[in-house]
Image (cartoon, rainbow, N blue to C red):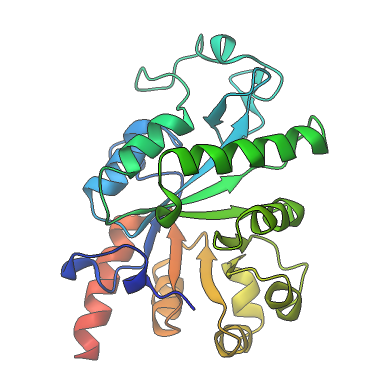
Length: 254
């Protein structure tokens, strides 16, 4: 439905780039995952996308962190001031979604795969986070640069109800393709093992116009497999390797 070339990637050299840096481009320079530095690095290196994880704090601030805890503090049950007492490995404090979106909207080659983490506090807290994320993205005029992803299907349903044009993708295989299409979701974002277990899934999804992302693909052979399958995006902890293999793959197609 939405190929890489249509996702705000204007520079010709990125036309076939389907690399999504998992939690930012952190590995090569040993940067903290989900940090401002790792997000900037993904943009600097020209990747098609950068994935990151978002929670809402106790005082309703949207921050980036993969785990429910940050160095012993519950992200959702702590205030921003409390979380900022903790330093990341490069000296940064916890990244704010506002800061990430400011960086995002100053370029047009990299999109954000914004994962909304399920709330451990309450369903209401999770829905409040969803609503605030939507308003924040809208305030930054970043709608065309964001793909919303989540393991909580109700979050994606809420997003589509509030903004039917929003691009979303489900992270779990617990719903079949017909459910995804029926609910108007724009994509599936499954673990690579799901697609390799059922080799017909990609073609079936493609036939129904569903955008396909695969995570987290770190093995070179798996990278080559999904490049050959022509999926829309591949999320990886090894973005530099994937980009190198993709360029070689494109050369072989010429």
